[in-house]
Image (tube, rainbow, N blue to C red):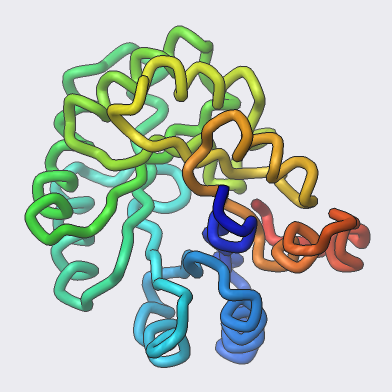
Length: 234
């Protein structure tokens, strides 16, 4: 098992954040050596400037937070982010289509982006808001993502629903069966919760940046921000 900080994709995604807010969060995550910072598209260059030469990579969200853009718009987003040399992309699938059972459209939506990220060697994580889905839909969507060429399946944006659950993550891991990596995200705010998912076999963890310090502490105590209800939506 890697040190817990090396599992963390630290979310810096609140729409109201000022540049000063983002810089403060970036500095915090770089100090903790989180695996990555997951940022808004408008903050890509800012994050790259701060993370250059550090152990922290830059991930950007695509189709965030609802996943309802046209598939062609998602492809256009991916082309722009890859041209900017992002390290990773977290894409939101159209979970309305998933709930409708429109699997062919969902697979094409993911595959259009995955084709580009695969060619560029950039990991693609696909978010499908498992809190809104049955376990059967989670199972099917995991298979869809394998076929479409994604690198990870991810539970949640942190902005819609209850976040990662043991049942959904277990389903993703069982169905993925080593063919795709799994990223629980949403509601992970202390070390014990983080370690529980890692011990299950999760490969990365999506967490709000304000929770990173608590997760990295042996005690796993909640941060003041989280306790005050001011933590990142993750």
